[in-house]
Image 1 (cartoon, one colour):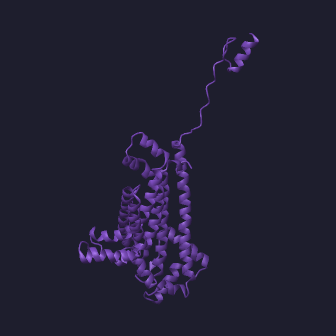
Image 2 (image 1 turned 180 degrees about the vertical axis):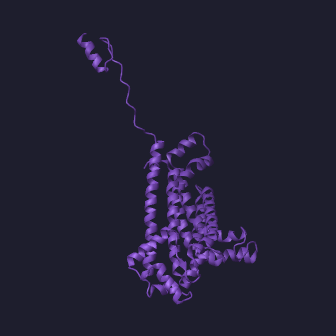
Image 3 (image 1 turned 90 degrees about the horizontal axis):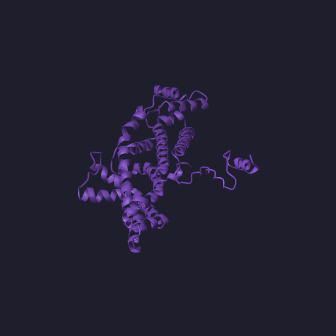
Length: 352
């Protein structure tokens, strides 16, 4: 074998090459994935990591809320037994039951650990004013509050999307007029909105009942009362997001391909504008927990807000502590759902 032939075999990985011919090129190595879309395995791992982080941080938040509520009980002036009884009946038997249930005759660290242990078992304690379990009280009232919250959230989102779609890219006068209405809805206190709606649609026109929880008609005005401020904020954010998205290069490309403006907004731009809007939905849910107390009182509706108001004014500490923990659970749940929703809206977050 000649020297030339031997060198060609070595260069081509053992394939014999005739003298004077160009050796065949080696197959190119696979290129790294340059597509913006992550693979299904990478996206799955990213989703699992995100869920694990969320669950871990959620447990910490709930533990912090429960601990803060317990420390507030200990820090309150006066005897702990008197604080827990509040305005309820006070007998030696009830006092002995409280000491036994809360372990007040044991060291404080044992009391605290016993309190956390009862929470882990789903035991929220007992209202000594109402002579009932706190879990039963909240279970009865959470249904009307959940219906009101879902109706208010759905109304706010629908109103905000409609406002954004109708006003995005319009002239300055239309934009100023809508912005003024949105600012008014955000600035006016919730109880004022509720009283105005009651005066117009219940007292004057008689379209909706004044108070109570009797069918869908009694849900309209309370849901609007909670939804209007949120729709004002969400509408502004969605409109600005839409206008920025319509100026991006992908919008120019879509127009050049013949996509109509309406289709461009519905299929592409709205998705880009939803990410900051989803963040505000989390803020709206947190606001809902506080605003529901006022709204349920104005419209005379049953619900957790009304129970909180009665517990605070009556000094029913076990109910107040349970509501603090329930609020933390709701906030953690909504935050987790929103975190997963971000990854559905923006595929780039699935592998991050």
